[in-house]
Length: 145
Image 1 (tube, helix red, strand yellow):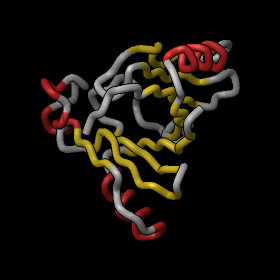
Image 2 (image 1 turned 180 degrees about the vertical axis):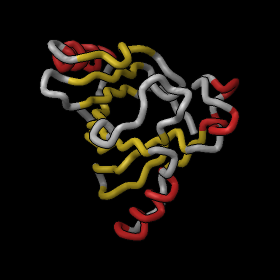
Image 3 (image 1 turned 30 degrees about the vertical axis):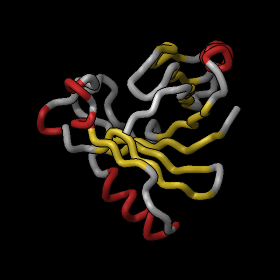
């Protein structure tokens, strides 16, 4: 495993929240990607939501970052306080991603099976049998944003 990060979802106010967190923790944003930055609107976001935050990163230390996205109306999973955070694991390989995904999702639920995305060679989302939400992310050679 390379690193672990906290990943938050917000109801359209990610930018406001992260400006607040930056004022508290200091530092600069490592990345700010809006939904309109994805070619051909591959995320399937409504026109009025394209300027919302798709991904933002605020480093908190050398190996820990606070990350987030805006939950948009066009997604099938609605924003609910309590389901707005994930533990994001940056894995070392596709094999490690698949192994961890299989173990963590057993008895839990699958939001997204392991697959290639614009930002990762292998990415998956699941909840374990205790309700903890996980993102598994093997970036590999991909660089987006």
